[in-house]
Image 1 (cartoon, rainbow, N blue to C red):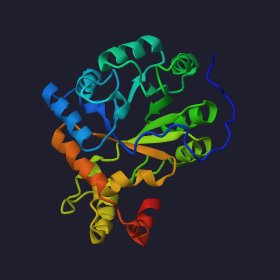
Image 2 (cartoon, rainbow, N blue to C red):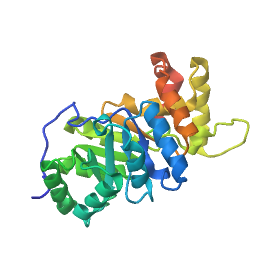
Image 3 (cartoon, rainbow, N blue to C red):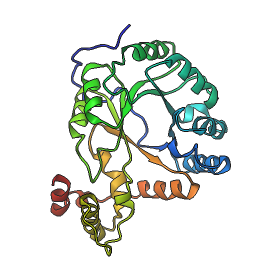
Length: 279
């Protein structure tokens, strides 16, 4: 079996819809074991039910598996990643480290320009057997993901960066996802420019300047720049989820508080914001 290469029927409803926010596990492997466990528990307590990880994230899988073992498996969504080779063995290793018998979602990580037919065939077999629930592709280059969404029957894409308050370059990918019924997950929205908004320091960096200008628009509406940054991606109909990276309980609790605070609709209609988002 190979990955289907055909024009998929237009759709506006994702075939697979992960929760609105998730905890990205990339920083859990580097944190101390106790801190990582407390961070995962804090995320769960805050209502997060989507946890993403990878064998490449150090001890992230094992730490997630240990911490989440205290909660009903049916109550949260779990995703991990594989490369183009050794897919079956990679999935088996992830299942062992996570301490589960199935995964809700598996991404092929950064395939670049390489064909994913062989990896897809293994994942499709595992999906047929109920070992995994959905198949996705993860990467940093939206053009590569766009070609795969066009040619392969994917359930999900995970885009690291390239769709945020400061960068809308991947919008063509998201439009194609919407048309194909593919869920889009984005990460990397809380960038350094978003988190460091001290406007007293001189800068010539275009992204920092734009972040400061958007921050100034936020203030009259009682909205913080990080709050707006977390809310923005979900305004595109293809984006079902935003992954938040955190390495401490305090960090994930603060981010969870931000996502629970609604951003007024009139903020998004502000003409200066509209200009800044389209420049």
